[in-house]
Image 1 (spheres, rainbow, N blue to C red):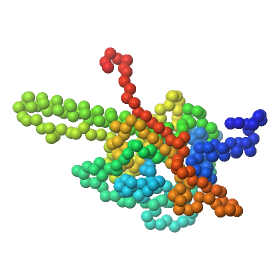
Image 2: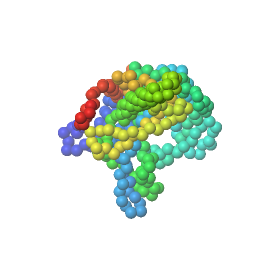
Image 3: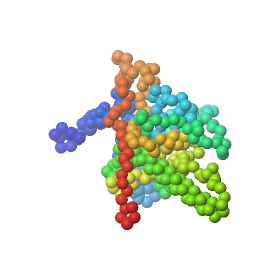
Image 4: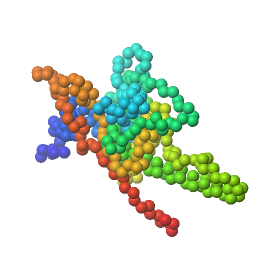
Length: 353
């Protein structure tokens, strides 16, 4: 940061530089997006410090980053894909509501902690449509959404605390604050999602190789039985080489924990993927043959009505409301991560290859 030749950074210069950061990295000129971006950055560079009320001991709590791959509905989306994932399922974002609001039918209500004020606020979202479970002999992948890896995948990464087994959960009388995290625990936007997709791609190849080996062993056993008994080969009973990592497609959200790999072994931030099972299966189907993937950060702001042009993007002259200008490209290329996969030889220290 440029302190302008002064011995220290004044509050005025600090706020000015914060605005410069938001203005440079945000996609649109929009106050809500600036605040959302700065809040995301703040939560990624800090950890929670808890001072226990009973004995004054200090506990530093490291977060879990929930990585979520979501369908791109900026242009209306693919109707078949939207139908497969479900228009109103858990991908919908909960919106705040009055704490005394009467609970309505077809809505789910929950209390979510505000990461800044650490207070619980009531939220609501539409319930997911009830999907009938498929019959046991149905092939779930017949109705899997068609996904193309040529277009960027949108992702969200939320910072959450105290949700894992063994995590200390602060009591109401504990003092909770935020402190700067160590550099090994500061991860750029998209890094956890990139690792999740990479681990998924490798897992697909492992599962297919296991299925191939199992089929090979089953075929060898069948040949031995034919030689011993003189019977006929029964190819139809051999199991197909399929990806054993596919989930039962019911339209539900699943959580897949995975390890964050960095250059340091001291990284304490954890990660967990949050994704709809049908989308999970669709990505596994196409990622095994994919050589490159692009992922793009999804922002809740500006509002969808502003992005679509349904409402005016500029405040009227003389109004006190901030001005909003929509970027025609719709995204910031600097916040888009490009992943390229390349096969490399596997070396071993043993005599065997």
